Every structure is written in structure tokens, then in C-alpha cells.
Image 1 (spheres, rainbow, N blue to C red):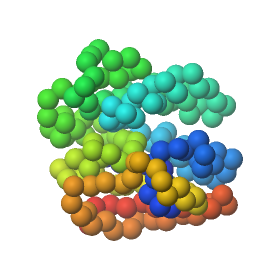
Image 2 (cartoon, rainbow, N blue to C red):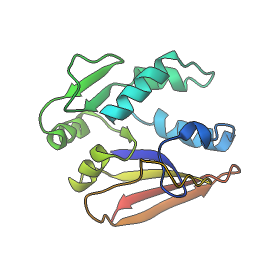
Image 3 (cartoon, rainbow, N blue to C red):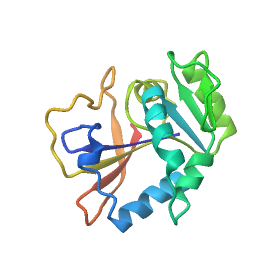
Length: 174
């Protein structure tokens, strides 16, 4: 299972419309490799609601949107009720146990964002890799920041830099 998220240098996740650069072709290829390699998506409620509003209306020449929209999605939420739309299934019951079962069913699961769900998955030992896109921008006053209930040691697997100044770092739990 891979967790992937984008953030500014100071750890901010929100306000992406102000700092996310989509005009770097190498970065786009890097993102494509990650998503085209996935055969399922795991999302928390906030990510699901945001992506559900955005992605179904998107098209592109690369087939990224079509692929992402077609992927089976699993949503961890205690406030949503099913059935869900956008090829999504609500996880009911123990999230960690459900994800263990999904890992047996799917070769590659990707989860976007680093909120409570990601922290829970890391804590349960269910995460193989964490991909962090670090953007050369400082916000300083945003609400969302990387959080975890306790320190988590990581080891660097790979790092790439792009012409846009974005750094893509791949980590594994230590």
C-alpha cells in the first residue's frame, strides 16, 4: 500500500490551487506512473468528497482521468452512509482489518493525503511506501499540516527533483 500526498515546504496540504504546478512534464509522468500502477484507491472522507466532485468531470489525452475514475475506491468514514457513488465502497467496521483484506485482493493500493486515515494505516503497519511531493512554496498560516499520533521513523528510498522545483521523495517505514 502506498500513501501519496502533496505539500508545501512548511507542511501545508490545503490551498493547493495557489501552489500546485501542473506544467512540469516530468512531474506529470512521475504522477502518471504512480496512479497507472495502482489497481485500487483508499480514501478518507474529506479526500473522497473533494475528489468525487473534481475527477468525474475531468478528461485528458493521457487517459489519467479515465483510469482514476474507473479504479475501485474504498472510503474510510464514520459519517458517510452507503451506498457511495464514483465506483466507491464505504468501509464498515475495523478499517485496519478491512485494509488487510484489500491488500490480499489488490496488487497495488494508493491512498491520497495524510490525515487520520494515513496515520492509522502507518500505525497498523499497513503502509509499504509514502510518496511526498514537496512544493517550493511557504504558506505559513494554513490549517492542515502533517500529523501523526506519535513519531514515525522513515527511511529514504528515492528522491527526485523536477524543473519546477518540486521534490518527490519516496520513503518506507523504518
